[in-house]
Amino acid sequence: MIDVLSGLFVDHTLRTVALGSATLGIVSGALGAFAVLRRQALLGDAMSHAALPGVALAFLLTGSRAPLVLMLGAAIAGWLAAAAIVGVVRTSRVKVDSAMALTLSVFFGAGLVVLTFIQRQPAAGKAGLDKFLFGQAAAMLESDVITMVAVGAVGLFGLLALWKEFKLLSFDPDFAATLGMPTRRVDILLTSLLVIAIVVGLKTVGVVLMSAMVVAPGAAARQWTNRLGVMVTLSACFGAAAGVLGALLSTTAETSTGPTIVLVATGLVVVSLLFAPARGLVWVRMRAWRSRRMLALEAVIADLASLAAQHGSNATHPHDIGALNAVRGRAVVERALTELAADGLARQHDTGGWSLTPRGLAEADRLARSRRAPGVAR
Amino acid sequence: MRIGLRTGGALAIQATDLTLAYQQQPVLWDVDLEVPQGVLMAIVGPNGAGKTTLLRAVLGLLKPAAGEVLVFGQPYADQRRRVAYVPQRGSVDWDFPTTALDIVTMGTYGGLGWVRRPGTSERTRAAAALAQVGMESYADRQISQLSGGQQQRIFLARALVQDADVYLMDEPFQGVDATTERAIVELLRALRADGKTVVAVHHDLQTVTEYFDEVTLLNVRRIAGGPVDRVFTEENLRLTYGGRVAGIGGRAVGNDLEPSS
Image (cartoon, rainbow over all chains, first blue to last red; front, top):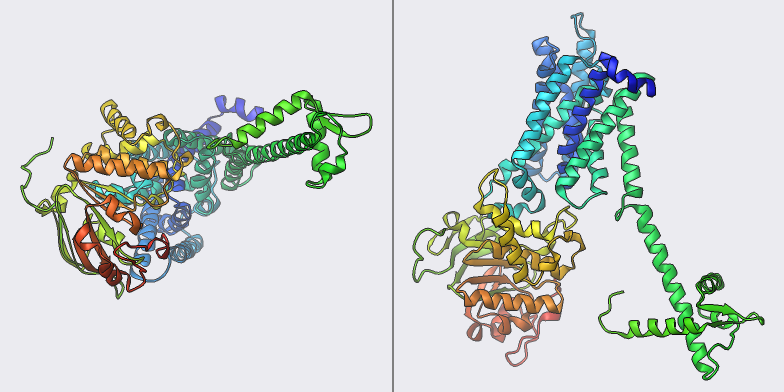
C-alpha cells in the first residue's frame, strides 16, 4: 500500500485512477445522501442496472467509445427507467417495489442481450464494454476523468443551487406544494441529478454495484451527524475515500474495481453503524446496559434501606443476602452489592450479612426523594 | 408586502360543490365549505369522512373531480401567500437531519423564490415564531429529539412564519400533551384576535364548543355547518356519525368511540 501511495505522486496511471475515483465518490456520495433520505436507494439500483442498454446502444449506434457518448446513453436509459417505474405505478395497480424489480430486470436483460451481440461483432474497438458490468478502474483514461469531473460538476452545482428546494422536497413535499413549488418538476430534477451521479461512476464501479456507491456513503454519514449540510459533505468524503482506496487496492491486487470499492464503502458503513457517537449500536447497547445496571443498584439500595428501616434504631444491622434474593436474582444482587461496597455505600459484615453504610443510607434517602418528586424525568 | 385590497365581506374560504373520489369510492361528495373571516372553525366527522381530504383539496394538493375553491373571493392559486398549512405531524419523517429552527425557517421559503437561501432576517423571524410557541430554547435541537407536542408546535411555528391570513391545520391536537394543547389553544385565540382565520380538523368532540366558534360536520357529504352553538347539536352529530354517538342532553360524548387515526 505504501508503494501505491508513493506511486500516486509519480505514476501517471495511478494518479488518473485516484482522481477519477475521488470524483465519482464525491458526486455519488453527495447526491446519494439525498437518495438515502428520500428512501430512493432501490430506485438508484434500478437506474444503474437500467443504464447498461444505454451504454451498449450508444456504442452500437455511434461506434464511439468516447466517455461522454456512453455516459449520455447511460443517462438516457437510466432516466427512462425511472420514468417507466413512475408510469407503471401511476397507471396500474402494480406496487412500486414490483415496478422497480420489473424495470430493472427488463432493462438489464436488454443490456446484456445487446452487449453479447456487440461481443460477436468483428467491429474494432468493442473491447472494454463488458467492463461496464463490474467496472474497471485500471482502464481509466485521462479523457474519462475529464468527462467525469465535468459531468460531476454539473450535478454538484445543481445540488448546491437548489439546495433549499431539495431539502424542503425531501422533508415535506406537501408543504412545499402549498408554498407553490412545482414539486413534480423539482422531484424529476433531483432524480435526474441522481442519474448524473450514477453515470459518472458507471465505468469505474460497474452497473451491477453502482447503487452501493449511491447508498453506502450516505447511510454511513447519517450516523455521524444531525445536520443535512454536514451529512452531505461527510457523505461526499466517505464516497471519495471509498473510491480512491478501492480503486487503488483493485489496481494493485488486480481484482475487479467495483466490488473492491463497494467492500471499502461497506466497511465504512459497518464502522459507522457500530461506533458513530449517539447513533452507534455499540454505544446504544452500552447506554442501555449501564442504565439497567444503575436501576439494579438503586433497587438493591432501596431494598437494604427498607430492611434497615424495619430495624429502627440499628440502621446498619446486617442482613442475610437471602433476604434480598427473594425479590431479584442472586447474581444481580451479588454484583450490585460488590459494586456498592466498592463505592463505600454498602458493606459486608463478618457474619456474611450486608448493610448500607451511613453514606449508603443517605444515598438511599436521596434516591427515594428524587423518585417521589413529581415531574422529575429519569 | 401584501398587495391588493382586502376584499371586504368575502369569505376567507369558499369551496363549492367539491367532489373527489379514489377509484370509484367517493371521498367527498358535493361538499360546500364556507369559512367567514376571523373565526376558528373545526371540521368534525368520523374516520374516513374526508376531513383531511377536504383540507388537501382546498390546498390544491388533491385535484377534485368537480368544484372550485375561492380564498378571499379569488382562486387559491393567486392567494397562496395568504394561506398557511399545518400538516399532520405523522406525515413527515422526524429523523430528517435538521434542527427545529431550520424547520421553522422553511415557512419563509415561499417568499424567497428560487435558489435564494434564507438569511439573517429569515432566521430572526423563525426564531421569533419559535418563541411564540414557547420553543425558543429548542432552536438547535435535532427534530427527532423533540416530543410529539414539541414537534407539533414546531409545525405551528412554521405556519406562523408564513404570516398568512388563513391557517389550515390537520389535527393540531393529535397526540399532544396538556401543555401543548393549552399553548395551541392560546395561539389560536391570539390568531383570531389578530383577525386571522383558522380551520382545523378536530377529533375531540368534547372540546369543540370550548375551542371553536364555528364547526363543519362532515361525513363524505357536508352534514351541517355554522356557529357552534347552533350547529353542534346531538341531532346533527347523530346524522354525522350515523347514530354511533351516545349524545346526552346536547353534550356530545364521542371521544372514546372515535379512535384516533
